[in-house]
Length: 390
Image 1 (cartoon, one colour):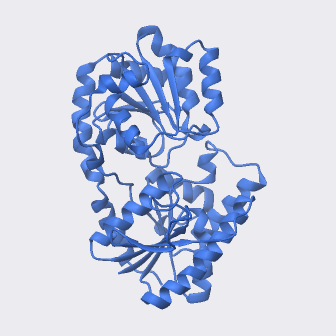
Image 2: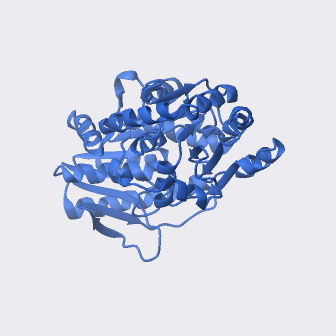
Image 3: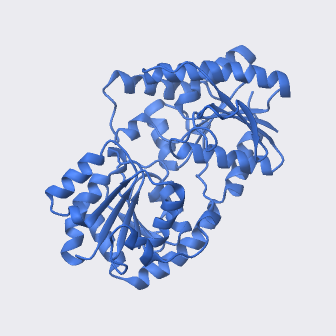
């Protein structure tokens, strides 16, 4: 099949978050199965080529006029993507499937639909409602994004999303028919987590005693992801385990709140707020920590869960969205009550107070993550493609 993937980010252009990983890894897996795959995305650095073949995938990076208004910025990108698609189609021939990822590319796909007659598939990785912490955005900015999310569901032939929780969210928020939505979980590359490290040495790098239990938060420091809930849980953990230490790896608009609130609670010396962390360093943190905490208020999937499992580490996660579906309670992790620091603290204490639990659960996690290889994700995606798109 000749497949066109549309994403505002990729691992080989501009990486913003998890969509880049999903789009690029899916493209690679589809190409390995003999498909001709093209990614349409943005050009990042000046030295990047506009058209390049990487790992058997054709990457097309568009150049366009930026704009301070983010929605207008996306409109300009979509116009450039549509123009680039016309060029690529002329060069390579008709496409069998067009597949967009998130609201950023909706205008490009609707342009192509009405100018060239293609239907398309949309994957939703999250919604503006979820990113606002299960709340409707009250700003004009949020309402414009929500309109694009609705438009993608309305204009597309099929919708793919990353969990059953997200399927219900899309049905409720945008009235997308249930029969139109398929669920395909995210994937992970466990091979990236292979190899042994000296966990004690990694902890020392951050000023942590080698035998102190470490709880890792990895992800955006945003209201949706709930890092503030973990901060509120810290004093409750320290009452029983004063040797516990907490690492926050990621950037976001709650960075200052995390640091300030930890200081107010008197636990500033127990946390490390690292900001953005490169992949190599983050993998070492996964391997060195004892528990990974995912305290999200809304979590469409939770790829952090799979990354923790790949490193053989149990997860303490709020019982919402993807983690609720993924985690087998007390077998591959612990589910905590949503929006409840006391419950999060209980789960963390249960885990770090039982080295045998961490060890046994870690082995279970290594087995469970095998079901989430990109090869299997590509097979499930191809099944949807083969159902046909007008």
